[in-house]
Length: 286
Ligand code: Q0N
Image 1 (cartoon, helix red, strand yellow):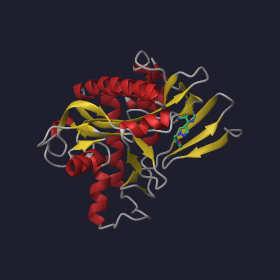
Image 2 (cartoon, rainbow, N blue to C red; image 1 turned 180 degrees about the vertical axis):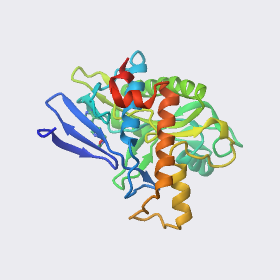
Image 3 (cartoon, rainbow, N blue to C red; image 1 turned 180 degrees about the horizontal axis):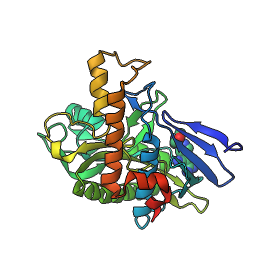
């Protein structure tokens, strides 16, 4: 990695250039909550997310091309194909939460999808909906209409990524629900390869790119606990932190409890022991 050039930073991930056609995506153990990265890391969080994304890429290859080349022995670095990323975030919602719930309350619709009256917070939608967003300058994603999305990528591309996003979500949602996890919504990022084909990039179907809820605690009509971050959120609320940076340091029991939740999500979804992944990360690629 000594000769890898840094090309981009996210809140908790870094992207490096390996050569003309390949990038290295490195997931750190940093955790964010209420949009702030906390000073305390969650050991192995980056490995859980990397392994889970690689698992989904491997399982969905017949649905959609993806950028995965391989996972490195460190378990947190993904070698991937370099793409020309499309300037939209492809969000799919199966349940009414977050900005989807806010928009429904204010407008009775989400990104132009007219929804039935009388839905409650966290209700399952009659059908999953595609609700594209843009990365606004503020750093906060902004929901856009189908027409705005079509202006950004073209109507045919939009129809293609909408179809792929819904197929990917339906597959993952069914798989996860059988294993006790509700994937309430998720965000995909697609790009184009040299041949101009649409390819799934970024990380996909991880708890950082999705809302994961414990299925056995699902009660619509209120906000749902987060499968992975609930201990962190509860602790942050107890400290009375005002949610502006810097965030609080996390005590050891919150760190270990949160690490255990990430590992549990990995093991439930992949049916692979996390220790087996640590010993050889390529177990998720088979
Ligand atoms: C790419 N992002 C999203 C920090 C910032 N395969 C790819 N080819 C070209 N560009 C990208 C990818 C991918 N994935 C994706 N920025 C560039 C923002 N991030 C993602 C992770 O790390």
